[in-house]
Image (cartoon, rainbow, N blue to C red; front, top):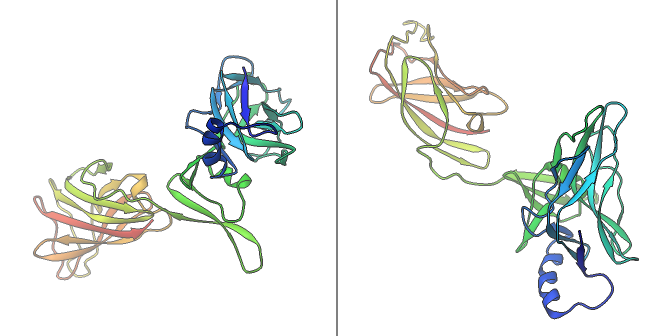
Length: 314
């Protein structure tokens, strides 16, 4: 396996410069594509493979022409987390793939961070288990970037990207490294993304005795809005005629995990078109319930259609 490098002391021609400048000028580290240097398991004792690809760090771009296999050392007891890196050495002008042995915690161990001398670009954190000849979990620590946007694949990458002003996207959230009035920098995040209005593709588990007739759902960041139309197909939902409290069968359906609240139960308006509104809840386990009827309370019988309205922050 040969790694060709551009950016160490020496001459850079026009073609090399054209491929180098927009990459190294966009972020401190990066890989050229999703497939580039994506660490994966392979045959062999505690073996991992780094596929063919290209990337950069601290002004040097590297291209590997074939996959590289590394074997991790055994751990006598418990678990060890090792860091797979791209090691750049400016004194030799060479780039290599290497393993930095870590400890028992799922965190990035100390590594070389001196661009212009020796620097180690994180690619993945790999779990080694005592008594096992294969590696366990692989945490992808790479970043991709172009046109000013940076994408990472796991929040653990934040621990080595904590440069003031950094901004990157991880799994639907934008993370920014901000500096407070005392000069202390911290990560702040906010959700991004808009599903648009959906009439299909959302999963529901409908309770016996009910039929889901349709829905319109939308998620913008962590905010969910929309409505569900559901009809009673069998049996009766009864209420106390004097208090409006529900007597039987309060659950209509269950909403899939990515469309339900994550912290506490949210109230719902459940409307019986043309007549009355019921009080309801959407719980953190996704269950949509009717909780109360207006007075004078009347039961929900077969054939009655209800519309449940959603509007909440997850």
